Length: 279
Picture (cartoon, rainbow, N blue to C red):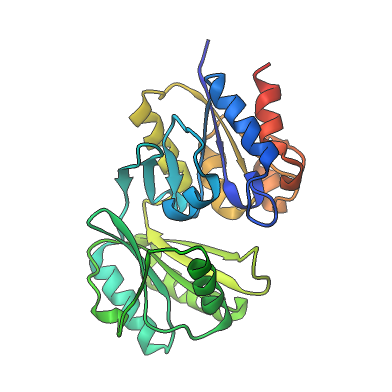
C-alpha cells in the first residue's frame, strides 16, 4: 500500500482565526501521530514562531518554515536545509530600500540562530509586528543602527510591511528588476487588517520545492501527498501534491486549484479530514 503524507499550512488553515491551535486540533494531531500517520506543517512562519504555537507536539516528520526557505527536524531541533538569498541581491535590495526611504525586517541565520534585524519602525505595521514579537519574548529581534551594514551572507527573508498600494509598487519594481532571481510573496496580514506584507526569499524557496526535499530526506519519495491551504503561497504545494485540499475560508483562486474544499479553519476541518481519511 502506498504511504501517505498529510501537510498543512498554519495560518488560516490549521490554526484558529486568532492564530492559536485549538485544544481540539492539538488532541487530534496527537491522535494522528500516535496512529503512525505522516503529518506535518508547511508555513510562512519562522521555526521560532511555529514552535511558540505548536508547542510540544511530537512531530516525526520535519516541518517546513519560511515559505519553504528552511526545513527543520522538530524535536530534537535540527536545521536540515536552508535557502539563502544571494548576498549580492541582499545588498542591492537593502540599499535600494534605503534610497526609497523605506524599511524592512531582515531575517538571517547566524551561527545556527535566527535573527530578525531592523533599524527603523516607520509605520503601524512594523510596530505591530515588533510589539507582537516583544510580547512573545522573541529573542530573535536585533536592533541595529543601519541595516545596510549588517552581514548579508546568511539572509533568508526580507520583509516589507506597509499599505497595499505602496507595496504593490514595490512588488512591480522588484519583479521588473530581479525577474526570476528572487521569490516574492504578497499578502494581507490576517491579524492586522488593512496592512500588507511583501516578503522576499531565494528564488528556490517555495513550499512545493521544500515538500520534494522533505520526501527525499525521509525516504518517502513515492508517498501520496495531501496538502491543505488557503493563500496564494500554498499554490506551489497544490501543484506538486496528489491531492490538494482548500479550507472553506480559502481565497477563491486557491479553491479553484483544489481537488476538494472542506470546512473553515475555525471548524478544525484539517484534523477531522485527516482522521476521516485514515479510517
